[in-house]
Length: 369
Image 1 (cartoon, rainbow, N blue to C red):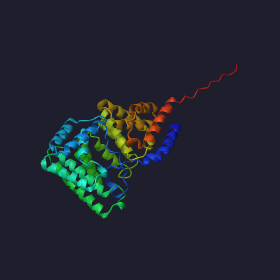
Image 2: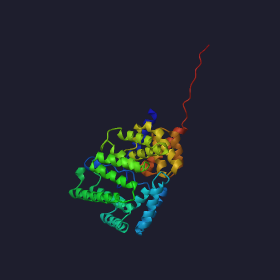
Image 3: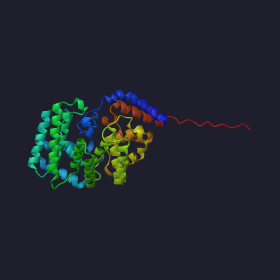
Image 4: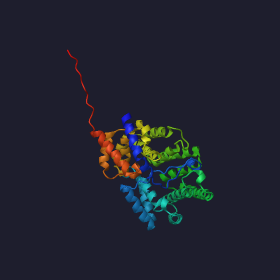
């Protein structure tokens, strides 16, 4: 084990300068204490692989053509049938990913954001009973609020940045309140309400919303990711809190789905840390592997999930599983996981060399009669 950790540290040190320069900032709502406290690290980019990518592309085209009714039908079907994609992604989340932000995300100008939000408002007007339209609008307003504030320390935010942040969040809350009164309900509504509760710093409100959310749809794993983030020490938690939450959540949901939620909490939390993240989580590997295998059995896998599991395996010394996953990945490496091609190749070579290196021979001695 010590030899493994030493090798991991050497590899990490060699690759550190490369991968630290490769983080891709994305628009993603931060949490309560990030508003006034520490800078929020950029989370992992949205997974754009396989069927998820295809769905995002198709729905964006429909949105451009103002085919709002068609998008509504797809979202309603995705909610009703709990449609999932390879990698465990919810199709509903892919639909919101497609319509909640202008193409280009963080590179979009204020004008592009305003045009996009105007289209979402037109959708709400055209389909006043559509919860999908209102949730998409609120999602966009929250992300646009964070564009005004930025993700840095509070001292870096301008006065006008604070004003725009508050104004856009207030509108998002109003839109969500209106959406909550509609007959049709949506699990993603709770994701956004939980994010607003984080920003407002209301622990009691957050917990009440979380309980309602998991009661409505216990396998919509995005709820769990939001709560796990709030349990980081940089926000409201203490060391070990989010890990305990992941354990409890897996046990409460149970079965394959519980293990999958456990795996997906860990993949999300790894985006807030560097590649040494798993060094302190060796005890989690059996359930992480169970979650990965369960996901493959129920939904199939995507390139990102293969890469995530592979990083966990090589980090925790399961060389056999890591080699299997590296072989399955081939050239479909995911830079949102490895941060650079160089890092990916070094870890792959490490797995190969550990399997092929000769085992130490056992020398026996005999005593003279």
